[in-house]
Length: 96
Image (cartoon, rainbow, N blue to C red; front, side, top):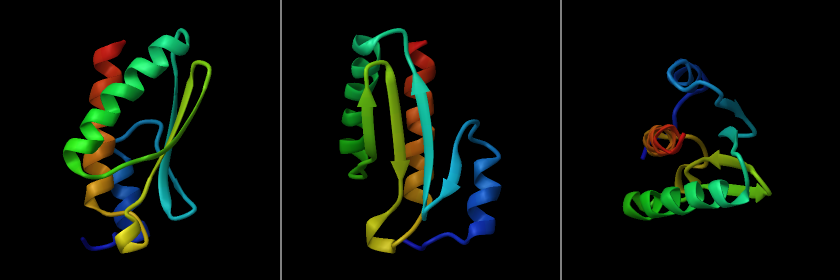
């Protein structure tokens, strides 16, 4: 998988509200009503990540979920990260 340039990444980020590029990855965070809702979404994302064979770096404290995506094999951001980011957005929107 080819590592994207910073210009390519920033162009693609125009289609993902709330995502930013820094530290060689794309990042976002979400807040939910409570821990249960956050964990439910994390579980759905986990199944999707496993299906795509691409896994996020993430953390959860109570109702907040922080996600970072990069492709370690490419040492940066690739199309795989944007594919998973889009799926994550769809999962979060469906849970709202």
